[in-house]
Image (cartoon, rainbow over the protein chains, first blue to last red):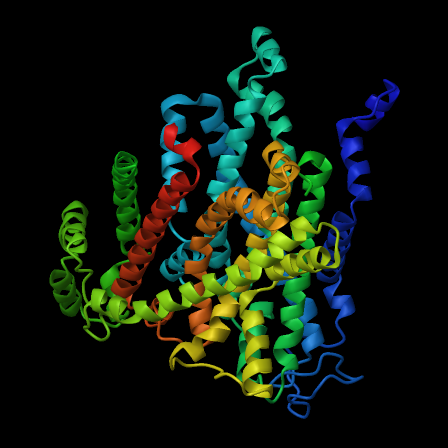
Length: 289
Length: 306
């Protein structure tokens, strides 16, 4: 798309947005943090100095040192390695919840916005019911019903996000479908399915990107919260939430147990929030505050 | 105004009904037979049948729902399987702690956010503005259970100013309230800042300044009042997050509140209590939103007209 626009002597909207994004410090810091997070998750086996589940009873609760940069936990596991491997659980959490929310929310939003009328009304009412539950309460309820497992918790968090995505898409569709190019495509005999998928959907994706970035942040935060409560990832899988909940018991003797996984959650969530801010500002500079 | 409240109340009824159906289905969506889940795999068929008959699980679902709803609207949410205490009583006993916690969290967050938001908008790009931006970023991205652990470490274990956990009057709610309220404070600060910036650009503010009104009056009376409308919206949207996060905060600080009741019951598989608490929190959330809605139209007369 960029090359075609360049050939026409103009600049594509995507290129303008990218240019805007490059100038946003907030977005760049966010992108750097997210990039670091993805790199750590991808290269976990290469980066971690020890096996994240290997215990060493000669080195129990040792403070940070040259040998164990982040110290060791109550059964002698290396905290740095566990924080590194924990990024994989968080990455899974972020991606899976957004995937669940998208795969349910996107079609619902498209249908509600495109068909309109009674169908729209019914779908929006149904989403309102989901929104009537405080997010964490709903996630906890679903996990309680399905049983405390990571995959159940992630599914539950995804369901909590469905209304956000569906409403966003619906609002986009409502504006996009009024455009002349949609009327033109319809006049040329395009079917409803073709109209929605080829002409309307691509023009709805930009705000979706922003919402997805914020949702990954929230998904990571909620997964660690559920794991902290004992309803998400189960030991011995290294998850930042579980590590924090273990650290709680040793707060006085060994504060490093909770300090590092907490900082990891904070930096990752901050990264995705900043990235979302940066993309939003780049796409629509008017919203910049 | 009364007419508006009546209309909103009526519109809420079908929503509450739908919420009750969802909550009711929670227990019946359990994979497998609820009787087996409660009594365990090794229960005899005889015991299972008696259990089903006792709790009415042998009747058609619609009948069970009608029965359950009929009791629920009269305040009867069944009994705990574990302690046999009425669920409503269990909730009511723990409610004051939760309400005080939420109230204090809101109070603390407003005490931080109001001055910070106003100053950072009025003195844009100043040191305070920068500090408030960082505070907002930090507050919004910090997991509250981590913040809680840090607060316990610093103020309870190192400085020994406040108790690390347990409930023993207002003092023991200070750290939990900060834990719960920081994210809200961050959001309100940001919202108030952008709301104030928007309002300060308006003609009527310039007019007020031009006719020589003191800055204090222009900011406090003309600008702030209008910027507060968006703050009410943000607080309304965040009530759900507050209610949900009380579960984490109460469990972290070992407070005997409703959130703690829920997580304890989830662990002991006391499903009637879980069901009751979820219904209670959802209804509370819907009602809170209704109140915010009405408050909102009170603050902004333009909405009342439509």
